[in-house]
View (cartoon, rainbow, N blue to C red):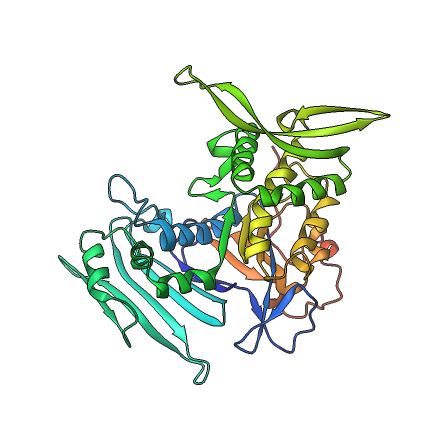
Amino acid sequence: MIRHLKFENFCSFRDSGELALTTSAKTPTDDSFVNSICGDKMTVLAGVFGPNAAGKTNLLKLSAFLNFFIRHSYQHGQADGSIPVDPFAGNAGGPTRLEMEFEGAGRVYRYAVELTRQVVMEERLSLRNPASKSFRTLLRRQAGARTITLTQEEGFTDLAALKNLMKDRRDASMLSAGLVTGRREFKEVMASLGRFETNVDRMGKAEVVQGNRTSEVVSCAEYLRDNPHFLADIEARLKAADLGISALRIKEVDAMMEKTGETRKIPIPFVTHRTGNTEFELPLTHESAGTKRLFVLLRAFLPVLTEGGVAVIDEMESDLHPHLIPILLDLFVDRHTNPKRAQLLFTCHHMEILNQLSKEQIVFVQKDHDNASHVRRLCDLKSVRREENFFANYNAGRYDAIPEPERF
């Protein structure tokens, strides 16, 4: 579970900021919070709200970038050797500083990196000592004029092997390189972080940029074909959502490839509807946008709920009826459906959802007059009572972070 994210000079966030997902052990909470081994509590839900273009998606991009960089940057680097990070437009030459603290499998790690688009300047992995409650550095990487310096404490890993991998990779994370070695210590770090699922990439909400909802449904069908143990659960939840669906299955159908003109089989989800005493089957691609959206979200949620980790979803409400959103949030709150206490970080424009969250779970993002984004939690505002009607007060402008459009 993520405990906090700190950032500076990242996308629209010019200044240093923090997204904290913890609260005091004395805070009155429900099952949407988890007791931490640090003595405080962590939330399984965090909703990000604010005007259009305030920087909400950029906040989600932060976790998506860190997931890519930590896990995949060594094997899937850019062809030109650059780092796919975007600093604040007014400080493009300055370094970006990021930090993530996360807890899982009985450990608390802190990962920090300072980098530009050309080079990782410094990278540090630390582990919390339960006795002293302080963090000690396990592995550190620094960029020299010509070489990369790697240092460690207490024989954390095979440093010679890691140095050999990193000698020509100024664009990749030392943790990503460590995963290539297959060594247990790097797998333990990833186990603490858990699985990561998102619909956000460098360009924003991925399904908007990369294709249409049909291609996204096909991609999910490919995943379910290869992971059929999730199929029955998704079928049950689609049926429970009262969509008129009585069955779901994945079928291989012939499709012509646009670029090559070749025909090959691709997996397509089909749903069965019942009317009277008869049944008929339709490809899910022919269903409503809301049904397809729900299918895609469930495919993202279930692996995280099953294995533990983080789901990061931009525009949670997209194409969905507002009454479905609390049901989806409950998947993470309910200990039966979320035994590993996975987290959900999401943006949303259905402001009624504010009343489904605690004040420690509500995050506001807004821009200042210099076009720089700032983030704060509702609990950071003074005199906000737990029993307030957050939806009504937000609409009344008491929390700011509301659109103020001029007349068209």
